[in-house]
Length: 321
Image (cartoon, rainbow, N blue to C red; front, side, top):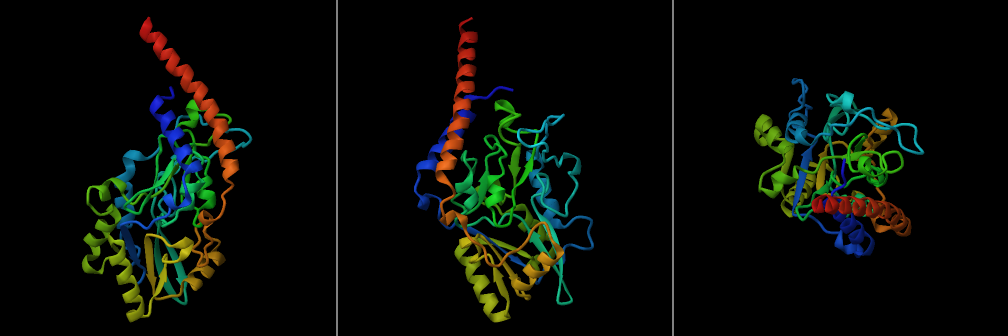
């Protein structure tokens, strides 16, 4: 497995941008947002797979990881994360399932909550990645460049919802120091980036509307229009909003007839893998150990430079011969 020059320079560009760019360069609200109406979601309980989940998996299956086995643990860990034998698991987030429906019983009522990346206005995952593998797009979504992700899981650690999921045995770390650096590649919802760049809606939005028509759970559109509708409905229908202020604001807004404090309390009681905290501290607005990031990035860049240099030199020698 050869490390190509494009990957090397993409990592270099990402590190440079993150270590010297001002904070405001990453902090902006996107053009689009999603409304998720919990008063309308029934989890597609009469179908084998919720429509939105099925559509998400179908849309992204060509990007799902195919790990090289046997997978070796990397120092100092003695374990690794491998979901490849659980590809059909749809009741949680995995590298093969970027959207799931969380079922919660609150005050005698059953809630079905679609869970995926919130696509924050000021995403700490973007700043926290030492190698620039994550970026916030002008459309408002946050994406992971799988070709340069080392799977260090910093993004998951600083995400208030711990959304990104890791698959070992794939990615650039295998080309560098598979026993000492990285741990795979991180995966999450990117809001169907290629679709929205073509002027189309995310697959989950389309699938839900095909089933529920004008009572669809999801609504996607310009951020200011969506937020205006969220505020208006919350006031008129006595509903509660989630996602407007959490983590400094996001591009995903939930509406619920039940207070999110009660939902949060129930999820804590259930010891659910994915929580829904009402009070969310945004680490983006604090120092995420910038010097530590520079040191880490420099050490790996040094190794990358040596490998890339040797590879390029080898290619030149082969061309001369």
